[in-house]
Image (tube, rainbow, N blue to C red; front, side):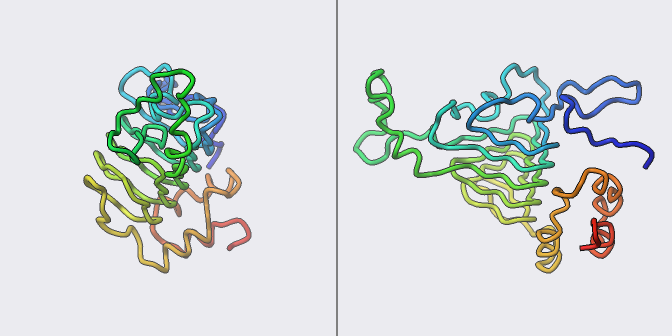
Length: 220
């Protein structure tokens, strides 16, 4: 490979052969500055529609200072229509009514903070593909290498390297057998130096775990 092609510092990582940037596809850490978001390098979002506020578009209930966080790992791919419904979207559940009376008064707006925070943070691992229109519900953890099918509604944790689909999302299959999954979680290619990742492109695009091990820095 003659030159580097992975550049985490650009807003639009994909360019057409004539050099034109694909403006609908953005590196998320280049377009979101939000105290409740943590975004790994090279994770991108693709939208067919113009977006002015990516944080609000993707996680509309996650306000600065909210009791929960949204953590997105490295090399994730988020398709058009993905939404994270974080804990602050919740209504009070302990009483007879779920109507949020307290938020209608400025002096009691924070009354539900402790209750809604119980769902916790939403955590997305590395190399996760979240398909078109998928919704991720509060407090979910999605493991490394998982695939969330288009239109899925994820209400429970998703295992690493699994494929889930439907509403509620359920396991469709594992991408690889347990030995390969364990090896991939140990190798953690997304943490390699960029030069090593670029050099290992063919091994990463393939499914030969021996080839990937051989490509690893120091031959893990």
